[in-house]
Image 1 (cartoon, rainbow, N blue to C red):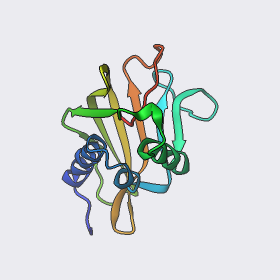
Image 2 (image 1 turned 90 degrees about the vertical axis):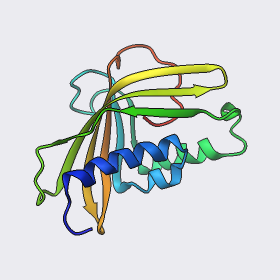
Image 3 (image 1 turned 30 degrees about the vertical axis):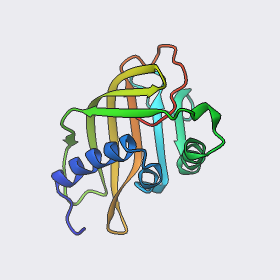
Length: 160
């Protein structure tokens, strides 16, 4: 990939959601840079994942551990396996500059997670912080802001 276009950024977001919906977790994990994070704040407008509690703040190593748990044969909490579906609004590229080191894309979503006869529905916005890494777009940070982030939640098994 030589020059990044806004459509490349939008396509990345759709591709990422499809990988999650199809449970291709290893390929999804490859979309992160080595220093990448997956962050789900606990409060609206939260700016610091270190000094304030978060629903999730996981680096690539911790994400790898969760992926291994999800696909493991002895993970009895995943029998039957959880499944998910992303319904995305058109991703919005924020202040595009082809020469920038990092690009941001914000996407409103409806997300459904199901396991057996239990179904859970979430609504929010995902912000992808994308960089060009060895000629490939990768995400340095995926921030997921839930509409009701301050509500009590059960276990969120998969990735939004």
